[in-house]
Image (cartoon, rainbow, N blue to C red; front, side, top):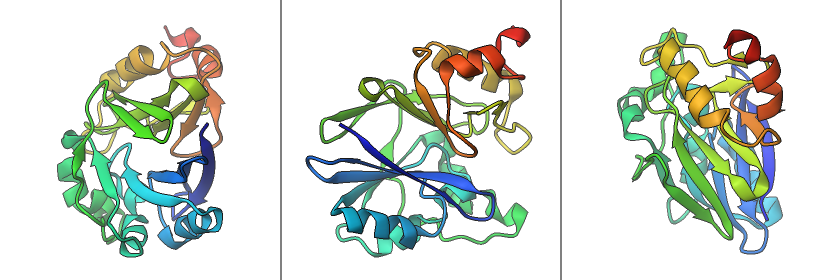
Length: 214
């Protein structure tokens, strides 16, 4: 079983997800967006131990809460990120362009790769490399729970922007069609911004990549 607590945090209303196996109380934070103390408090209230920080990509608004979380944990959480986004991470997630100077927290020590399986108690998260918004963006798919954490790849009725460094429109569209639209239609999509949606909804109605744009 997987429990999911979602937060919308920071200057651009970024979704962060605290996920845990309630049996083992092992927890991870997917995209610790901002205000790490809020996420930490939610875990502590539930008796969950945060052992992992998993970044779908390294933009500043997805990693802004990492330092505050890590500073309160001993041992430090393991940090996972695709190697193609390490340069972006080192540059503070590109926050300087928008006037934000963030502490990116502990260095990533796990390199995401296509097809990798991450375990959290009895839950398995499949890593799918889906570049386009950034070069290293990855989604995390939990088949058993019919849920996919998809960062800024695809949103409810929209898609990730491709005008920032490392973005590419054709690559983004290919990632969505090969890695998201191949999932079962009833898979929940938990994105980096906005309301959740499903694969089936976006296949049908997404104005950028839906059936009307094939």
